[in-house]
Each structure stands twice: as C-alpha cells, then as structure tokens.
Image (cartoon, rainbow, N blue to C red; front, side, top):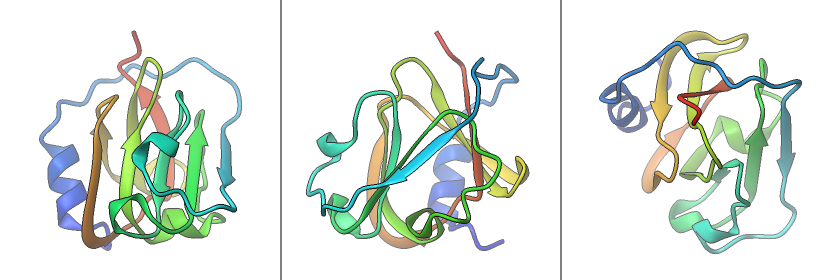
Length: 127
C-alpha cells in the first residue's frame, strides 16, 4: 500500500461510521499561488499542500469525489487540513471509494516529511 503509515495510523485510530454527507457532485481545485499557512484553506474544504508546513502548491476539495488522481498534489502531499464546516473527511486509497480508508476529523491539520496520497473521498459524521 502506497499510502504512508503516518496518515493511515492517524486516520485508522479514529472510529469510522457509515454516515455520508448528502450532496451533489464533488469539487476539487488547485491554487495557483503558494499558500504559506493552513489558514489559507477556505472554510468547508479539505486542503493539501505539496510541501511541509503548508508550503508549495495547494489543492482543495469539497463534496464527494470518486477520482482525485487528475489533481497532482493529491497524489503527493506533505501537509493537510480538514477545514470542513460540519463534517469529517473520509479518504480512500483507490478510486471510486475503494481500497483502504480513514477519517480525518474536522479541524485536524498536520504536516510531516512523508509523501501522502488519496485517490477518492467523501464526508462523514456530519452535524
């Protein structure tokens, strides 16, 4: 499994539930600027950065996405922040919500030297 152990361990220790965010299609975008802080992630989005300490190219995702492989930073990132407004972020190691998975709680952010990736996502535990 290519998903790094740190992301898998962090997410694996969090209880998973079956609740899904009700919504329509997903959205993912890439920021052209080089954000320098986790606070650059807009409310309601899950954001990743290519570099440590929230540096380099940022990509963000909202909604459910069956295929994030078209977005380069989601395939190799070192920082992340779940700035979801009311849900936890559930990632998957394969397209179409397959493979291993884990949940990143709302408000959780982390940066490390390992390279991480995710291939699809949904939102869970919405309040």
